[in-house]
Image: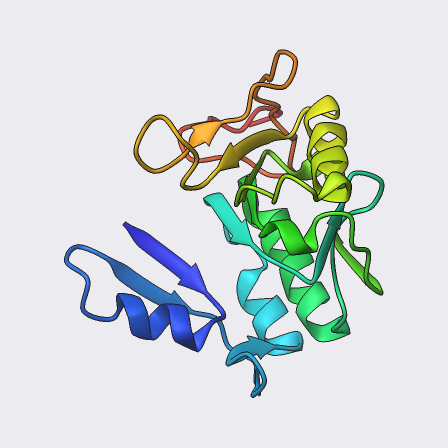
Amino acid sequence: LTVVTNSLLVAQALAHANRVEVVMTGGTLRGSNYALVGSGAEQSLQGLRVSRAFLSGSGLTAERGLSTSNMLSASVDRALVQAAAEVVVLADHTKLGTDTMFQTVPTDVITRLVTDEPPAHDDRAATELQALADQGVQIAVAGASGAPGGDQVPARQQQRRDVPLPGPRRGQVPSGPT
């Protein structure tokens, strides 16, 4: 497994994991969350292809998707999304229905949301989860009753959506004149 990250905390957590190679982006250290941001980080992601991107932010709405309050973090997240075949958003229930300044991932690009179970009285989170599911986002609730590791939330018929991205993917033969 190869993990590409701009997070020093993720790199540190995986540093001694068996059979995991950690690749760090370049960039400028954002001390508040120990992430590398800026043009160096964005440039290191150009031309890269990853099968799955895991992202988080400050807010998530069905209308605008994932957002953050930091412009530099948003730019790096957008660059990572461009490199990914699948986008997984990690957001606890407190971020659902919250919209912040900079959009990072539009809803139609999000493949899956991994979240926690909102409290029974949290209508805003429940409404937002349903709206996201209605737009085709697969919802996984971590720690939900049922199978260990969480359950899928049944919400209409959920289908995988492939998002076309520029450039050939691993295993694809480029088409066109040779």
